[in-house]
Length: 97
Length: 123
Image (cartoon, rainbow over all chains, first blue to last red):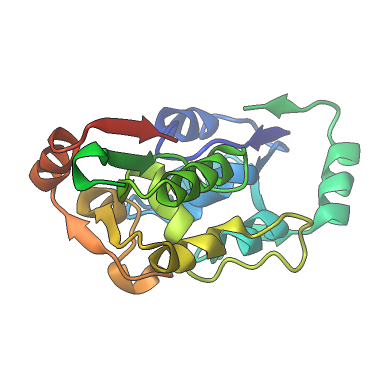
């Protein structure tokens, strides 16, 4: 499980790298990571890579709501705090970026 | 305070809200400058434009929505409020997405604004 808490505009290279996460992994956008949903740079190519390599992509709903960010990507699942806990429990480790 | 002893102070917001206290500290600094009747300008640059984004809602988070303070800046006679146009564009934002009224600056105008100041504070 990868958690990404930095803004796309600070770390766009990181999102490209995450396209190479492997099957069964989850990428969770949280804190400033959710700002990637609000950009004129599309996440489409990143998401296509994730879908084709069976990597699940999620964003923390509370962090989106607080920042006024709306999810425009059907491929990204919004999760709440209990969902976050489920993710942590279902993956053997977390890589925090 | 006499006009001659006034300083031209620019406060630049460059980071997004909530993940850290930078934005709140910037707001406090602006209000302090205003209390001392200085000539104040505020600029939103880079990820700082996310401070302005409308639709922020803290009902499900135990975090104070300090960004509401920006709407009250005019009450403190802080009327020179700007955003860098390129920063908004890069993030798919327009003036309609902003919660307050402000003036858009091109990169050249942003540079000119910085040159006019006695001091520039970045948050």
